Image 1: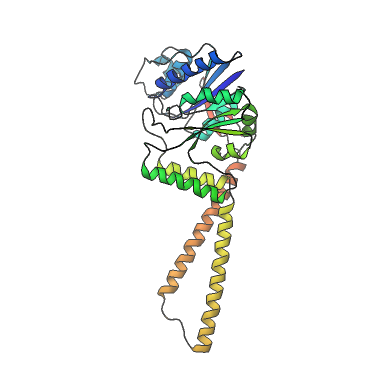
Image 2: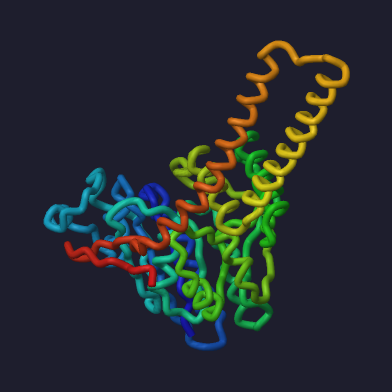
Length: 349
C-alpha cells in the first residue's frame, strides 16, 4: 500500500525545514502503526518560487546540500543565500519527487501536476507552511484504511490570526457561492484532504484549464468525512494570496460552477425593459391626456448612465464565460515543468 503526499511550494524556503521534520516523523509513526507494509511518496511542486525553495527541495531529495555550481549549470534562478540546511531525513520507505515549474502557474496547476504524478492508493494534498496541521494525517489515513470514506477533509472551526476584513470577505464568498451554485462549499474547508485513488482518477478526468478544486472535490461526489481543527498561523513568511488574487480566485469559483450570473443578467435586463416600457406608456398618457411634458435632462442623463453601466456589467459577465471558452479551446498546457535543462509539457488532454 502506498500513500502519496502532494505539497505545492511557492517561496517556502523558511518553512521546509520545520515541515520536513514534522511530516516525516508523522509518516514514520503511521508506518509503524500500520497493519501492512506501507510506502510513501512525497511530491513537492516548486511553483516558480523566487527564493531558494528549489535548492532545498533537491537537497531534501538527495539529503545533502545541493552544489551551487550544479545549480548554475542547471540554469536555475535561485537565491543562493544558504548552502547548508537542517532538513529532516525522509523515512526509508519514502520516495521524494520534485516537480519544478518554469514559472508561477498557480496552486491549482501545482495540485493538478501532483495528482498526475502520484501513484499512491490514497493521496493527501497539503501546504508546506504548516497551516494544514500534519497531526491530522494519522486520523485521515485510519478512517480511509477502515473504509469509512473516500474523501477525508479538514475544516478549521475558527479564523484566529486572520485579518477581520479578509475573514469577512471569505465568509461572504462562501455564502454567495452557495446561493448561486448547485455545488455547496463548506466554510473553513481548505484544500487539505485525503483522496482515494478513484477520487483522484475522477479529478484527473476533468481536464479543465481554469480549475477550481474546492468545488471539484464536491462535484465528483463520493463518501466524505470532515475533521475539525483550530486555525494554525503560518509557520514562517507571508501568504502569497493578496486580496486581488483572492478576488480573481472568487470570480473563478463563481464562473466555473454556476451559470447563475448569466441568468441574473437576463433577469435584470428583462425587469429593466418592463420598467422602461411601463414608464414610456405612463409618460405618453400623461402628456396626451393631461398635457404634462417631462422637462429637464438631469433625470434622463442619470437614467442613461445607469442603464449603460448595467449593460457594461452584463457584457463583462458574458465576456468572462466567453474568455474561458476561448482559453479552453486553445488547449494550452496547464503547466510546463523543467527537468535536467529540458522543457517537457503536460498537456491538458
